[in-house]
Image (cartoon, rainbow, N blue to C red; front, side, top):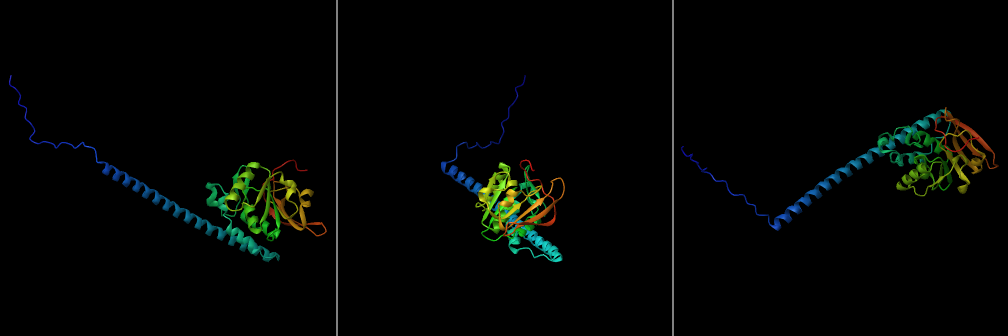
Length: 278
């Protein structure tokens, strides 16, 4: 048998350098990696800040547009009926308070529509135009003492706090009260007192009040609630069953203690939670 001839390849591949990099090169690579990571983080923060600023500006513009629309709408109605123009202080409060901060994240794009928004199984933030009208009818002066019955998400509470520094709220559900208080504190309304009790009977520890706002439907106004109203004070409440339209009624207590009632308009609110209503 013939032996096979094994030919060698005329080309030789260079040997690979397997020696480890120098300590200096390793440090430089690590520093470059850290700088690159820091640059990426900075760019992300800048983009997030720009998006946040754009969102804040957009919400502010929407808020001003809503406040203007409410002012024009209310004043048109009152001109026809011969009533006074809405208090500019109320409109200023509507244009200032960030309603979207009281709404769940998924509902924030709808915060400046003139409609109520749910903020949980036991709480809502009321329709902005009704918030403005009810606040205006109370004619709140700076320094007066105000009671809100039913804190909900806390939006109406913040509007009241823009009108005066002495605001108390009473809420039946402890979790609702706690959530609203956290939001109010975060937004700079920490002076507001949120109490847990059946608001149908008011909040005696803080009485008497210059104004009382009931922001959920009740069958009537209890004597206990009226007793907590100062002479010359005003109380606004939606009166009637929750199963149908209610009548928004303004109660005014005279200097002699006598109470007069003025129906304002038909409204639709959820029922005020609490015990048996006699």
